[in-house]
Image (cartoon, rainbow, N blue to C red; front, side, top):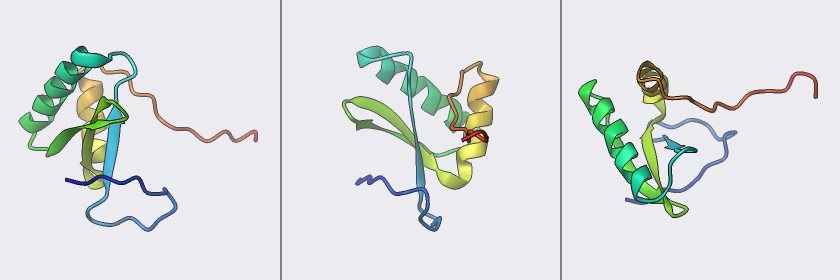
Length: 89
């Protein structure tokens, strides 16, 4: 499988993926946590893959499943760092 970053300004395609990484865990523990997250998504029939990205595990989900993924993670008490727009800039 090949994964390549795209600019957010590109037109969304059916095969776009969103990558999520951990801010709180690293190394082997991060791989174990990502597997638990992947299993939690599988329980609600969301496909995902855990791949190495920059030396750490990264969870990839289809862009159209991003909202359901975030909702599932928040239900498990996972803190999500989300991008925001600074209206004062």
